[in-house]
Image (cartoon, rainbow, N blue to C red; front, side, top):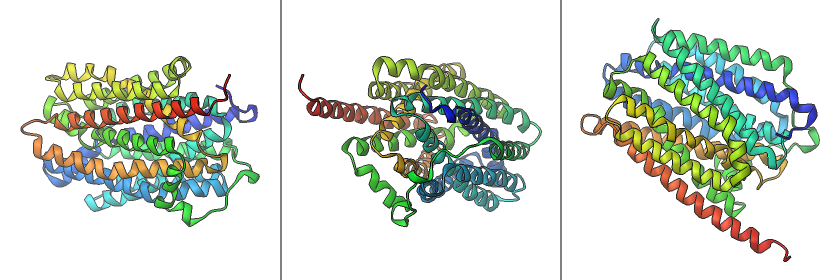
Length: 409
């Protein structure tokens, strides 16, 4: 991967911090629905409330992602990342002492705001990586996320055996470690001469998303981005509850399975993205990843037992080829001073999906759990299939336009 020499040490920080942040989030995945169920007293009601909390978190990201992205375009990436990481540490501590659902809701609000720093992590990579190396760079970020997702649910499942609040304290500690680590080693990536004045016109979510309509391919890829995130939230909304209801799995079993998911994703994004993109290009790799993910999720929804459900994780893992290539294609359509705004707009699109999708899948699970518990996964597979088909159409149009614009030989 080609990176500006002076910023090579920063790559380690970005990857380690990304891993620690996702590890902190993964720690609470096996236990948050259980804590919600303790407050509500019902598995079905917990499905609705868990979906509502995910939607609340995503709603905050919808509002604050473009603001944070634009702030990083104006004041730099370093302070934005550090403040957000410190906020996450405070949020996990807040949720660890939550006495009721409303306290958990407040924690989801704070978490949705502070976790919007992920937009700045991608913008940081765009600052220090040339366009042709971004798919590989984003693949490494995805692999770091996956590494955290391997360790987080596994550790969360183990700690959850000592009580559903213990993983929250561990998550707070990991986010605090990430903050102090960054305080010491993180350099700034955006020089003053490339910064853009802050404007509420661009920083509000609807203003930021106007950027996505500035290029035909960018708009089509934004639709694919929406569908990808919409399908993905089936996991955050119903996965833990589904596994407990259908297969009788507890926090430890769910943590092990989520660790397996993260391990496979780490292999795909860390090792496969570069070689596959080199052979197929960004567009074909993106489409293949979306179609393979659709097949895997469908198999999960149809699996009659836990072993086949686990086996379906293999094709589902190829979904990891889509996100870094999608990000790479989009960053090529905007200037360096607009990378933070682009990532903020992307997260706003993802957050719209994050608001609607968990509510939708939580409702689907609630009404279908006793008749066809896997229905949510089948719907998610259809959504991802639509994303693959749209991505293929966008890729064909873009390739045709590039051929038409090329000088005659």
